[in-house]
Length: 384
Image 1: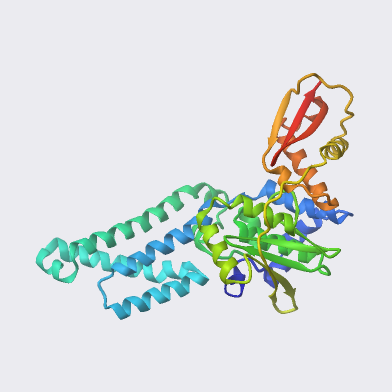
Image 2: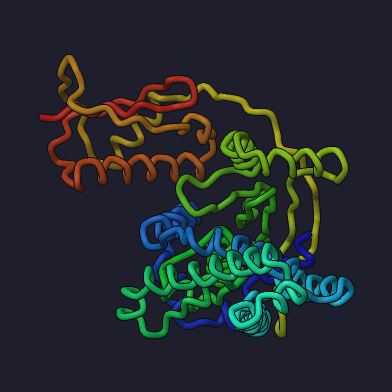
């Protein structure tokens, strides 16, 4: 699958050599690899906003165009040919579809509407009224989507004149635009993460981990794969696969794809190694895995509390009978792993949650405590 779609998230030589990407990589670098990796994910979580429209619009517009072609009053052979062209173009860049097929549909609708308005009997022979209505509705939906996007992104366009609404429909964006727009979906996060890792740790093996409907980037450190995926914490491969299986278990499309891959393929997860070269970057599939069964670990909450208190420089002196504040950390117990890198990034994630809740005013905290409640962690805050 990645052989066809790897250009969506595989960085190019230009991406890796991008000045802003190199500058960002150096700004995030620290002495320890655990701090650097945590900084990479933390920066993305703080600075990149999930681009919901780009996640959904490509599929929605593609379906509308496909339906429009089905209603065109042309011979079945030509219709199948155009549908094939549409499917092929959709794999690469739907901008070509918008450039060529959308004007074609528009021209046909204008022509048929003109005929209908002047000679109803002729119009019935050329195109049944039901078919004309269906074609008009789908075309109207396409126009409505485009108007919605232009209206929604007018503020971004005024602040960043280089912003192009057409990029919403592109399967792949260069790292330069990801950094400028500060908008991303999973394949953009994966591309940017791979770019930063290739700049910082070119001697380490870097991977893409592909599961149904999602992709992330991983790095091998001491024979263990760590997945960096949009938000803290960093997870080991096994823990990441388990977490996403649990997270997507209610998504019917995900479940169907997982079932097909599990029963008719090699596995639900595919691991591809990134292979950089002087002229281009390629990937090679190295393994397929099944998603593991969900297991809720027993979190060492005492150790986690002590390390969080140390990071926040809280002396843990006094404690009231009842905490002043409780912050539920949903599914955080699922993310826990007794590993130096994952534990460090988990503590950083909890610290960020606490800073957001208290608007950075951590000096008022006298004591903290972390407890476990099944899949969740509960952060209890005691103030002075």
